[in-house]
Image 1: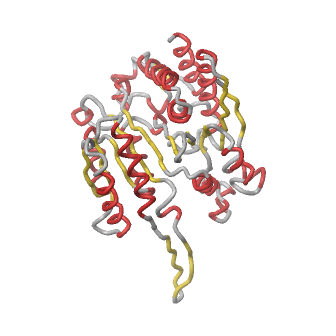
Image 2: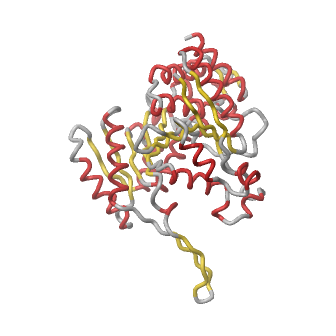
Image 3: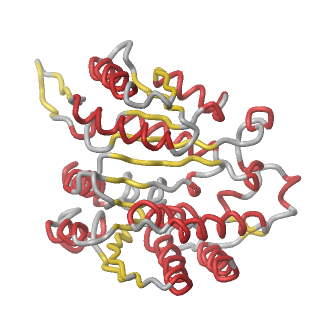
Length: 369
């Protein structure tokens, strides 16, 4: 089969980590008889440099014409990059928000799984880690505070900024249904996270989730306030299966979850719409401070490519092969700098490798599988 993959290499470490994910996809294509045709799509800072805007209409059309889009990371140093001297709507991240909205990518899936081999990279105590944890954070992606009306104005001589958080029942219902669907394929538990003791939007969120839950009698569910959830993620992460939440809460909680897995460099991500189309990206940022040094961890991007195979192309066997190869490389003791053991006792049993070498090692394991 032949598939058309849009590629947003982006900024910072983006081109480096995307190159390794493409290398893995090409290996899968050779081994399983598929052809992946790539089309480069400009977005973020590189698009600003080339076109003056973070995302063009042409780029959106390219993405829509693809079977799926693989993305690296966008943006730069907010303190020094000239991109951040521009108006907010012209900065790199505005391109990503526009792309999500244009493609109706309302469901963000961020798995957080602690590999047995990375327990020493986890900052939590051993008694908390136990036998590990495996959760899926389901984040609503096209509504809420990030897409509400905003303004900065002077009121009575005082500069005042306003951001509006808005959700309607249809937006909540569709992400809730997707969350319960995912839970059915996992351990059948949903934790819906909100701030219903304060926010009207959260009270509506809770009401709609309870309505949707009636259609899934085989899935248990609970409500949890976002501040409690943030605490529970470090106190007892293994209690969670699917965390269902709104846009900003999901943004923050998924980054927290990534760190208890050992590194944000391990956290893949899929953003899906109502069809099989999806945008796949690592959850970490562009890390401009290490760009070009060859030390970035490509595993999150490689695992995002595995999600692309699974969710958009329906290639479960191939996705399994990628995930198994990653696990084997870790079992064999190879680590990028971000997942090196924090304790000296474990350092002697692992070998530090760079971005390209990690990609090569994963490819070797796929070929041997």
